[in-house]
Length: 386
Ligand code: NDP
Image (tube, rainbow, N blue to C red; front, side, top):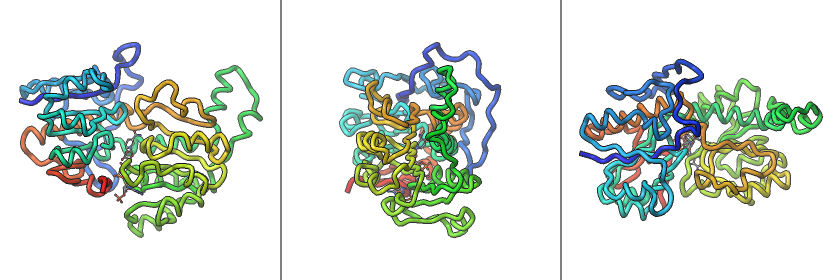
């Protein structure tokens, strides 16, 4: 019987909810491109409930315990002596979410002698040292597509809120003010702007599709080019590299995974090649941007705004400079963990566990690492250190 160690974010400060703003969430059965939403044999939760915090347990407890497995859930994940460190020693399976990542470093993996399966409840497995996972023969899987549209919606919201100066204008209302000139002196229309995405995978392409009706000029760069029909349908301009693309853009959105090719990509050098007053939206991973270079670019006006929900480390310390830099629209890491998304990735986590415990193959589209190598979707989108 297995020990499953699940790291989730804290419950709401006022306690686990007893009621919700809405009574249901739409049921999504198929994603764009035809991939089916998760298909576990059963679920033991009501979609639309809070599942991603400690008391929600991703809806897994009754299933796991009915099979004789042990489930340990904690939010205490950082530093020596954390519950995560203590429980990891004999855990067979680790589950965590990128919003509150259990950083599975090479050192931690070396100590976890029983560890076989690492599940990301969500998308983006960079909090697991993939080189170490490859070396130790672990399986790493994530719930591909489960929250891609959730993030794409967040990106569109952040682009509009930055360009139109929404957040400072809202603050004016909260403060009892009415100075319209203050609000509009940084407010523009998105229409006609050049918007580029770094990566046009599930999220990047969904962002392009959602922005097309705003009559913007769309650009993208990706390691693999999109089908010609899609380029024509959306009137996309493809660029060989991020470096080639960004000087043409008024808005840049980052939608690539964090891996050796993308770490630190948006530093002083690249930012200096962008048009003065570009907006940069990063919901991919904090480390794709150089923390201090972003602050400098906002202070100098090279960037007109920066918004996103991804930081390093997470949770971000109280004195993280992105909390106080000018013209930012940061949120905690929430875009991929709406209640709608939680229902999908909790079901996907259950599907992965059912496959694993029943000795059936995990869907190829969920696999990042298997049998000592990048596998499935991981082999397509990630790289390991050379
Ligand atoms: P996909 O795997 O569908 O897409 C990733 C795309 O990035 C692929 O098309 C890949 O190219 C491309 N890519 C990889 N490296 C580069 C590079 N160096 N330059 C340009 N393109 C590159 O993933 P998703 O779209 O679903 O998710 C993308 C990322 O977004 C995740 O890895 C995660 O980090 C982040 N994310 C954030 C969330 C949040 O809550 N904020 C939630 C979900 C995801 P190709 O495959 O063609 O080689």
